[in-house]
Amino acid sequence: MPESYSLVISDTVRTLSFSDYGFNEPVFLLENNTQLHFHGANDEILKDLVYTIIKQPRNLLTHLQRITLCYEKNNETQLSAALMDLFVVLEAAGDAIKQRMLVGARNHLSTPLFEQLQAYLNASQLIQGNVYTVLTRGLESRKDLVLVQQNDAVSSVKHDPLQIAREYVEYSQLEEAVKVLESAILEMPQRSEIHTDLIELYQSTNDRDGFNKMQLALAKINHPMQVQWNVLNTYFNQLNEMK
Image 1 (tube, rainbow, N blue to C red):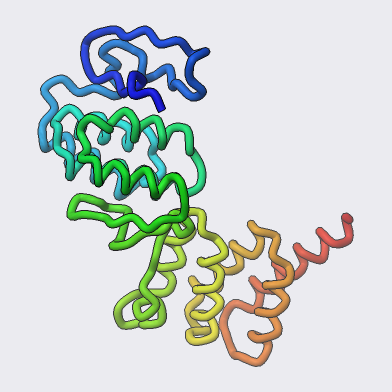
Image 2: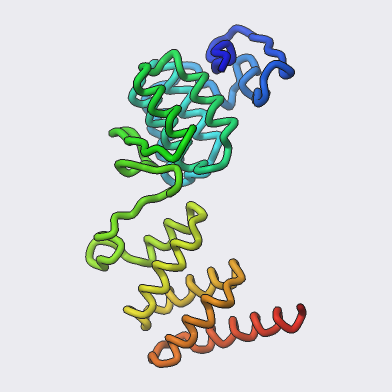
């Protein structure tokens, strides 16, 4: 892959031919782009960017700003962390921009680290986070956006299953969120917020089969949300009549 298509991290205008490369993002070709570049950038700005990513992990612009800033600071550890977090949040999507950012950052990465990141993009390799990564937890596979340790997932002492499920939803891992809520609701049927979240997921994903199974299981349990489950049942019946 041509290395001449590295990130534009300077005040010099570089003209690239879009016909020569499959995925040139125009934003990287703009001189002194105020959205990507920070004159006089410092560690405080970097901390603000990282904090924003923690709160808004799908904010692509903030990821790119962080990568650009780490590149300009020539800090390999922080740069690799910024790249890892971008790769993890995009999961299987955005292959073009992930490859673009990695190739652009190559000059500021050691060969082993570059090859590790490239291997992660090429296949379902595991990626090792470092002290600066905020979206990768230990070893991460591109098949799983968020890995929750099994011991934690089943322990209400260490983690609230409702919070775990909402984290899954935040990363669009709806199937995993449903599984956590289904397990939790049978253990804690009096927690109305678990019912609410699970009902919303069944409706948003149009999961009639999951709903039916859970409704049968809850029919044997005393809980405070029967009205809400009846409403969802009516909703599914109406959808079925419209087909």
